[in-house]
Image 1: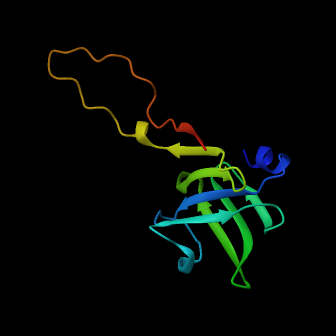
Image 2 (image 1 turned 30 degrees about the horizontal axis):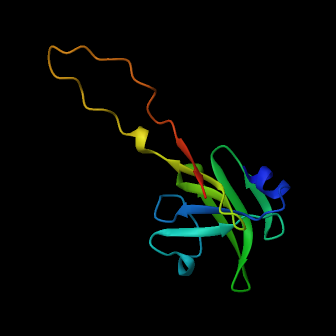
Image 3 (image 1 turned 180 degrees about the vertical axis):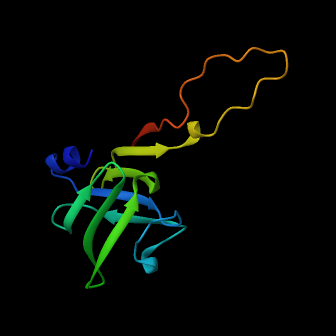
Amino acid sequence: MHEWISDSGCTPHLVVDAGMAGVEVPVQYVKDGKIVLNVSLSATAHLQLGNDEVSFSGRFGGVSMMVRAPIAAVLAIYARETGQGMIFSDDDATPPDAPASGEEAKPKAPAGRARLKVVK
């Protein structure tokens, strides 16, 4: 998504859950437990978009800071100019209630799969 947004001439932004363990962001920019980060190549240095973590060096109020966020803390990615992107939801991650005694368990989709939604 980051590459697609950038190639489209837009600015990729991440919404991160700032309260999750392992998140290192400037707390003065956190609002309602979340922070929006500009992750464009021109706004970041040493940008790493890995399978486990997003990390980069960025400037906040003129002060350089290293930012880290586990992938699980990333709530959304979208283009600032259009608002289009994806919201990552962990609604499916909660296991369903166990079947009542005597009922057979029906096959379910694997738990922990993220739902993707288009942000407009």
